[in-house]
Length: 292
Ligand code: ATP
Ligand code: MG
Image (tube, rainbow, N blue to C red):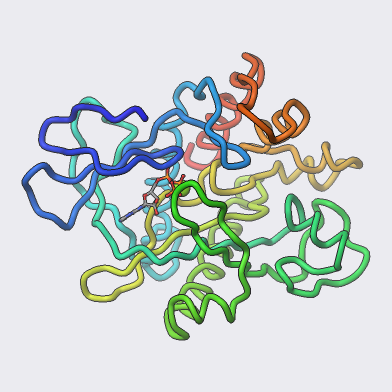
């Protein structure tokens, strides 16, 4: 993938969206996380990228980290950002962070029913095994936000929804409970803040790691349009069809297009210009609406 030659840093890993670097010969406990313009859906990296997306994701994550560090009035949530300047070549789309012992759990919180949750609910009345009231529609608000962890599979494999009990087997009872409680707390705080700006935070996914002192620390990207579903609150209240109700400021535009254009075998087709432009516009609008 697109590893850069950055003075003082050596490339160590590329995920679907981010490239990770370690200091070439500096302190071993820090990393440079560079967000690219790559876009992925259904575990595929698509062509072309979304211009400006890496910077928008980075700015949105940094804004949310600051809110959750106490700017929103809540207790400070520890995060991995170090107040250090990234190299000029990647300014705006990179963060210098503390390297953490990442927990292999994707901490998903859902406040609304949609996506894979809606699909499962139609079959079984549950989401990730959690029973829900009968009669819910696609896009409905859940009685309470629910925590539905997934096992973060090694690169190239699919993440797998797991029960809370299985997360206890993977990381121990204490950490599993801490991941759940922190995830639900952060979701509630973020959803309240989003609502005050006319947005619904339908669902989101967090990743946490442990720092050198064993402190649970929020990592990766947070509450971005890649990791979350955001809807327009007014459209949700007044819309009559699922499409009208779930007017999204996130990657759903790409998912919906790909679901109709690709049979999930072979290489996915290239994203058309209008999908690229609409996605870029929605990502920009989300940042403006939230952070001003
Ligand atoms: P995968 O890791 O399966 O490729 P992904 O496609 O979501 O998943 P990216 O988001 O592109 O990956 O890459 C970011 C990677 O950096 C993730 O593996 C994430 O767990 C890891 N990461 C994020 N923050 C930290 C941190 N503070 N310390 C160590 N690793 C981190
Ligand atoms: Mg990721």
